[in-house]
Length: 456
Image 1: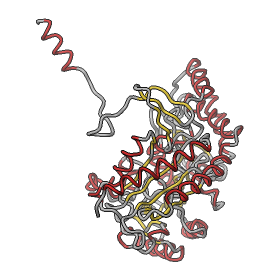
Image 2: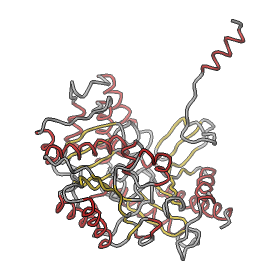
Image 3: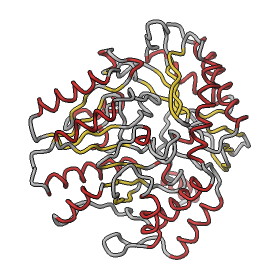
Image 4: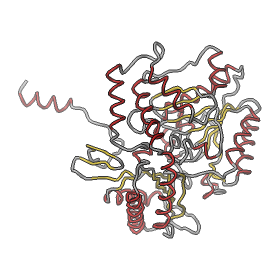
């Protein structure tokens, strides 16, 4: 083989990254600290989205890296059926006091989708243990997001993500989103009144049949799909009461809302509601390690374990390194009062964004709790008519924001499954006042520039 042929063979064999973004060249990240990420060209980006609403204690925390290294030097992997480990046992004890679940038991996994899948299996195992095998129906909401594995995606009510895979979906039922801004709009599958929302859930439960509904699954505050939408204040107590009356397990998806993101330790804390089963991820390890948690109440845990065990597992569940990282993230949240900081700085961010964009004709709503702040963009403010998807408004907003060194999180399809645009802000809790001002100002500029480029 000639030198040329050998070189060509090597080139042909070279792999590549299947990027999550197709059609746009991505910068190469090389360093991050606090709320800032730098690329290989030396350009700085203000991370107003915490990645994907993940980074809560800030980028570049040396103490977390140190905790990771200490555990990795001791051992990195033991199988969860053979050993437990000290970091995991310590983390379970430490985090338990904050979880909105009575007498909680944690099942650590590698992320939010795995956590949701594990919660679904906990639900099934619980009802089997109680000799109620006909409880197979799970109810979720339209306008929700619960993950991208097939079970989690089927549970999700985010239609743009479901469309390519619809032939493989259809096991679960969906009710209207608790979405006051678009309440009563049939296209949005949304209701804004608690009485109507509960009546619908009661009707679906009755339609499915007595003793057949296994669980109701929802985000306390809807993040990615609708942009920081809170339900009416009396909604969650009414849902919890309905679930108790019908023997339905209440499953809280706290993947995005957990660990201080909404200004409380968990989203359910805003209403004082205790879930039977809960999923968490993202802020649990703050972006430093792939970690999710499926959490069972003491009742669910005891019922399952007394029946013979939980038929489930992942290779990388119960990670000692993940637990060491999460324990240090928890310590930082506690000692630096960052949950309280999320509440205070989140209120400031909403004020700044409202001052900058509240009067803009293409801004329909500014909302959120803590450092989870949403902006809904509309073509007509009076009628709430969304921009058509073909206008690609949100792509323009993101483009102009990136050009200004601002990173945002966005959503589409909130108005009717196809049309509608939202911006979601979720910077790390260490964000400074100057950074909050920069976020609001540069977001305002990006919205104005993108809206001016769109003709509707």
